[in-house]
Length: 398
Image (cartoon, rainbow, N blue to C red; front, side, top):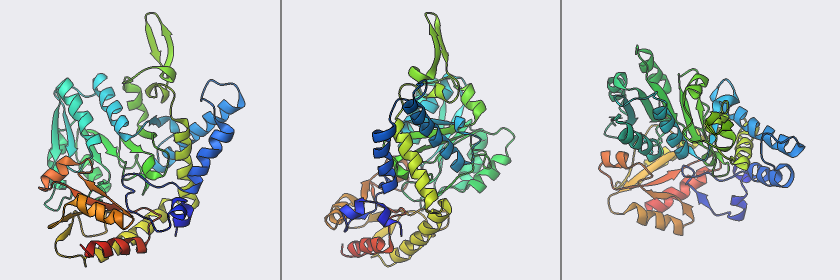
């Protein structure tokens, strides 16, 4: 349905690309936006009185407003651009600790579904400042144990958790999480890793009481090197900048410095301007095909088709996570009785099918399930039923 909008499939017509959870292919609209920006609009942003700089600044800020709209946030001033989600977690965790918002006696609650980007920065901060890390456990099938979350959340200062798993495809039930939060007298800070969620659906940060939302751009078709985090305005003001310099500074004397206002105080140095422009183009493209409502419908139907097809795979091939399409993305990870995932990935590559094998930066998840690794196939809007059929056909040949 949308495949023709992506030039790579014209260049490689036989390509079956099932690795979008790692990084998405780029629509022609995004590719054209990058070329057009460098050819017609490029200049450094802010403080330039000439037209090119003002146009470049306008596009940069327009990108933030587009992100804020998809998150139902108040304004683009609550969006901080970073280089990726990993950088955002490092910046945010360090800023919260440096500002004393989290203290040595506090508990940081993570889940065993989480990507390393939402684990290691907190572990580093906990080691440096003395906080405790606790874990939301998993069910035997690898899905989140909401009873464990209910039990542990009252004792946490922060819940930082994935909004959608990059291994099992499980989408966090925000209604359920919100109900747990509402039952608490002292509510922890709620940080959501939207890296796998943002390309597929809108999220209402106000409705669900999300204090910070972190995501990366390249999984939603933008250039690499651009990510962001949303933060409630009062929290962004309260956090001391983790890093300083460039546009993050308002003034400097020999005695010290004054940080810039929001959100620029958290954006030191020259940002990835064209990355922001490409992210704006990606969101504009989503709108042009009918918005996330159309994306969700298309992907849900394709996921349901894939799950039905997977029921006919040989007994030695097992799918991790839920076998139901509810609260699930088109992210499928397999284990094999008689094959190593790396070997299967090479076999599929020979058939021009692109998947990924390994731990997928989720060691705690794989260790919890007693696995050394898995093979992951992930869908996006340019995938088709024929792609699923090709995958199933090759897996049945093993």
